[in-house]
Length: 113
Length: 110
Image 1: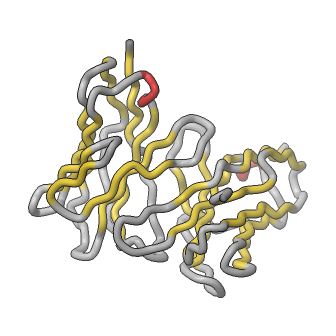
Image 2: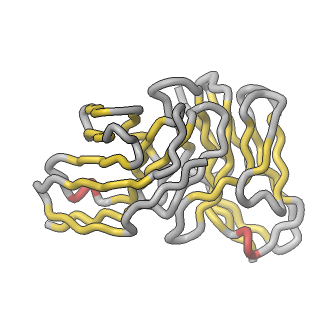
């Protein structure tokens, strides 16, 4: 039972390259989220998906696209990477309802040169 | 979305009780209060969640006054391993645009 799995764990890109970050969950949760965390900062929401087939912008969506492929998978794509997108990216899921909270993956550390 | 305010940092010593207060003046009727803990190089981890009064689990206690405009996370007898960043979030807990603030950086000293 892996929970939330993010791939890759590390990646180095050159400016202008594209890349897709993958997130998969085996908890049958409805909602999924993508956050970025810059050094010494809190998490900022990029996009989220309340349920399969829906996606919405968060606080910092510019430069990113997402796909909720099915209930299990939520991918984040950088079409043309920029150095300002160097960050740690976290995927999270949420079942919803009382006494419930987000479950986070271990993160993808992305450096853009 | 209810905005939250927490102290940026706190210091404590091993064995002491630590209380971290979060202000959320515009909390909505259906909002829950959730606290997370984050260690370096890891994703946040759920600690405790509550709606009103007091909630206790094996890790912490959460105190919520009647007006629900603030909440206090209480960590009993902290150890060095409790050094982390603690985040307070407020929301309806379903498919919502959750906003993490900068959190409270707790340093536990020997």
